[in-house]
View 1 (cartoon, rainbow, N blue to C red):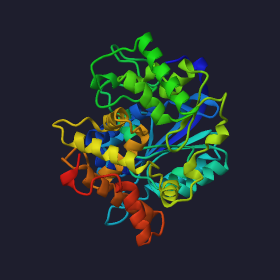
View 2 (view 1 turned 90 degrees about the vertical axis):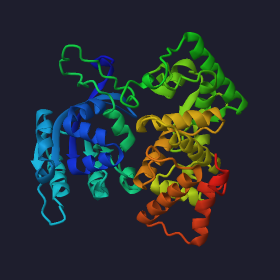
View 3 (view 1 turned 120 degrees about the vertical axis):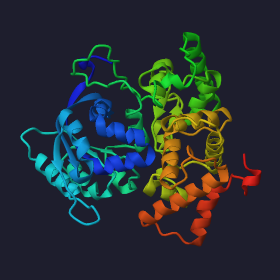
View 4 (view 1 turned 30 degrees about the vertical axis):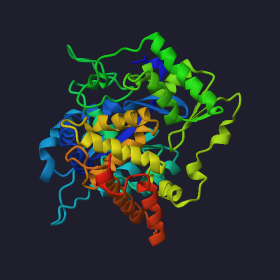
Length: 435
C-alpha cells in the first residue's frame, strides 16, 4: 500500500440498509452474507481506497450508519456497533415485515447535507431503486455518490451514481479469511496486510486458484510486444478485451497476476506501453495509438447506435456484446457447470473470460460478472446444476426481458425476436448440438 502522501483524503459518509444488503448477498453467496454481517470492517477496508477523474484518493469514514430490523437481525447488531457504526433499529411496521429503514436513511442523509462538516462523498449500501431521487439530490448538491448493491439494481439508479459497485465485487470483499484493516488501524500480531488494489478471488489470494507463477521481466515484455503488435495490425485501434487477449495468449497467467500492476491492465499499458492510450467505455474500452487516432474517434458506439440491443444496453446496463461473444460466454459457463468443482463465484467471471479469449472471442470480465449474477437471480445458478449453453442463454434472455419490462421498455413480437437473435443467434438450436 502506498503512503498517505500519494493520496488525497475524501470526507465520506456511509449508510447501510442492512436488510437489503444481507438479503441480496445471501441470494448469491450465503457465506459472503454472513461475513458481511459479522465483519463490517472488511467492507470499510475494501472501500477505503478509490479513484475518480482527479486521481486516487483515500476515504475518511467520518459518519457510519446502519439501519437494521432488530426483530430479525438483532444478533448482528453488536458487530456493526463494534465497527464504529451508529445502528438505527428499524422494526417491522406491517404484518409482511416491512420496516421504515429506507425512510430513516433518506431523512438522515438529507440532514447530513446540512452538517457543519461538508461531506464530499455519500455511499449508500442498497440496491433499492427507491433511493434514486436521493442520489439525484446529492449530486445536485455537488456530492460524489456511490451505490453499493448486493442485488440487481435498476439502470436508472446506477445512472445517477458516480460509481456503482455490483454484487460480485462485494463478494470479493469478503472472500479472504484473514482480517482486513483500515490504514489508520494498528495491525494485530501476525495480521496479513490488506490488498486493496484488486479484491481477491474465491476464499483465497488471487493467485491461489492457479499454480503460483510470478511474472518475469521477459514475460511482461512479451505480453507488451503482443499487445503492441495487435494494435498495429488493427490499424491503431483495438478493443480492450481483444488487446488483453493478445497478451494472455503469450502469457496465460498474466491476468491472474493482476498484469504486474496494482491498476491492472490499464496500469500495465501505462507503464509498459506509454505510447498507447486506454479509452474506457461501457463495452470494454479501446486501446489506441494517439499518433494515428484521436480519442474522440472512438466514442462508445453503445451510446451512438440506435438499434434495439443498443437501446436495451443504455437503459438496463445489459452488456452490449455480440451474438458470438454471448455464445462463447454461455458455452464456457456450461463447461464450468459440468465440472465436479466449478470455480468460486468471484473467480468464475475471470475464468470464462480467459477461456473465451483463448479461443479468440474476448469480452470484459465485468460483462461476464453481470451475466452470471443475472443468471443467479433468474434461478439458473451455474454453480449448482449442470446446464447446457442453450439453457443458460434462454434463461439470460428471459432475464433481459424482465429487465426491459421493469425499465418500461415496450417490446412487440418483432422486438422480442430481435432480442432472441441477438442473445441466442450464435448458439446451436438445441442442447443435442450444444458444446
